[in-house]
Amino acid sequence: MTLKDRVHKALASQAEIEADEERADALAVPGCCAVDQLTDRTRASVSGVLRSVTLRPREGVPALQAELYDGSGTLDLVWLGRRQITGIEPGRRLRVDGLVCRVNGRRTLFNPRYELRPRPGE
Image (tube, rainbow, N blue to C red):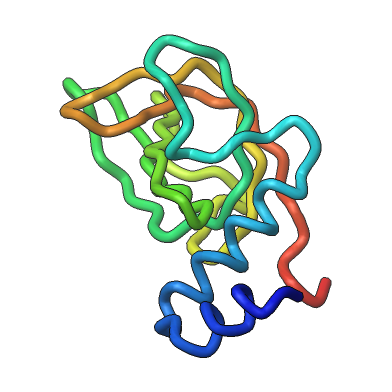
């Protein structure tokens, strides 16, 4: 660890430290990129932790919506036609793959392929 890294860690807030740790964990997964680097209408693989999971019907169709955080930003995940998915819960780590689009200015993946990742300590 360089002197610059030690000074940054000493002066950083707890939220900044957690974001740095999450970003490092997410980018350690082979083939994954950072959320803040995603561009519209491109295929991407992203790894992170689910911050929230909610049921939000869209035009009368059930839709499970989750927010994935990787330390650099958030990505909305939407599974249309689903009310729940086993293992998709707040605090769970995931790797997702899909086509990035913007919905109301937010990066979103519809019906992404996903892989459950172990929680820290598992």
